[in-house]
Length: 228
Ligand code: UTP
Image (cartoon, rainbow, N blue to C red; front, side, top):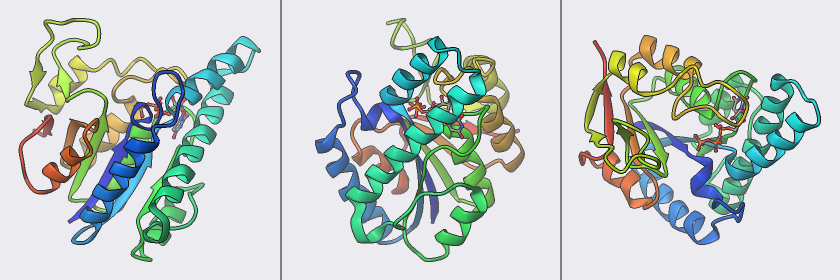
């Protein structure tokens, strides 16, 4: 299979901004295992550092687009960190554009991207890359177990949804939340792209990286988006 995996910034960096070394080592083992029988591309988020720098830039008067650009750079630093952790199996650099990434993908190495352009989150990068590569699967790994009826971090009665139609998905996820560093679980560009390409997408908790392997092996986990 050809698989695109989005790794949320919150998995790479804890809430205090500390890089989760042990987690990254575990993640690398799983990614190498998946790579044995599949082609993979990875996108990483900006996490706590992106938010720290974006907040500071905003307080200093930066327009949103510049704050987004700062987030893009931080996500790229996270991409470089994962490149370091993966060693030889990874393509040695990250990318400025989708086409650059696609060319590198043909090398057979795992490619790793951060952000690409303002006005979106790394979910849009993941969706665009999945569409461009004609991926069989897009796995969106975050620190929550899927899409919930309400924000599970704020509402303890929130229930996880196993399967969600794309039109209901837009009602659950606040796509209009579109400020640098504060994009929702998904963003509007990402939504438009998956809607047109209909790439199979599953939201899971990446807190245990084995969950990613389980999905690749066809186990049912998280929330699957279904198309009309
Ligand atoms: P993300 O919002 O995607 O990372 O990128 P995150 O905060 O770690 O979120 P999750 O947990 O992975 O979902 C960080 C910021 O970088 C900018 C946005 O401001 C975004 O909030 N960005 C990222 C862009 O402007 N364009 C991109 O293509 C990617």
